[in-house]
Image (cartoon, rainbow, N blue to C red; front, side, top):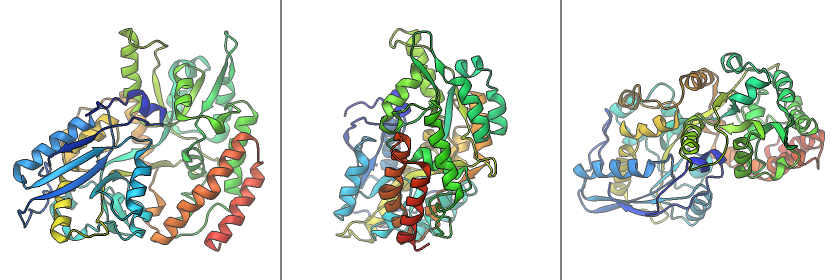
Length: 459
């Protein structure tokens, strides 16, 4: 197996490691909620496709599998460690061919259910398993109330700042962490953070990449729109709220707060600018960046890496003055699938056994390593007091979690969820990039959203 080293890659957001395939072996639930025992002891193989969730996740996975095999030696687990860059494409190809893995590391999605291959789990869920989940977290693995996945942690999107640069500009980051900030307050701060450096290079107030939709999604949620559709399936991006969002982005480019080439920036370049102190704030950021940057600072002290040490500050995404702050959160873990050539009910039960084993108490190390909220009581107990982020940033993450907005598609029927995905790829992405590039006015993009939305959603 190739070793997985993701410290700088995860911060880049590119997550472009090519990891290994391999591993066999599988494990009983190590949490209070034990999965039901296998009825049939015939040899079986369960295939798992996953990712380098954190720097030592493969080690965690091997141990979870080894534990499982102590009581289920007849079930062989074959896992493949995918790269963040290529893995999603590989999975989509397999799913479209009708031959997905039994378990895939991802959040639940309507398009998966729409294929008819997602395995509904409700009949396998024991009371003990359900009771082990913290309030509101089991629902993060459901589509319209039906269980298709078991989350391992709650993801959380935010922004992040360089403490030195913030303080030199007189930015009260502690107040921002505690009380949040409006778009107007962000603009005032960002203008102070945008300047020419002594070497003639430019320091920007904010940097993001133009390859994903995370940026516009976080901003639009903070303008009163949970997503393109709301939980009832009503189209949202057809009024002044989305126009305000687009204008906010457009003005950041015009004012020089963000680089003019933002539309073409790759995640790795975005990270490089933050590391080189050419950007005061980075979007998107997750609490784990605190640990990544702490490790980078250690490498700088050891002479392994050249550069300035950075103290990372987790920041909430600013919000529209007329709408409350919202934090993008959801669940990530394993989703179960069957294949076009169905392997039968016993194989489905075995798949769930493995799924539960990979999601139990010890699996909470992923939440612990990533500095993210636990989803199970047993996980919180197992890793109590072992958090790795600074107390300041952990406290900020807890405040942001109070403003959580869960993925809308968990409530949508599968057809609308599929259409929303299509709208994002075919309409939102090109318009988002065009506005960043200055090729389209905010008003033009807003009109395109409205017109295409009416065509696709009839609203």
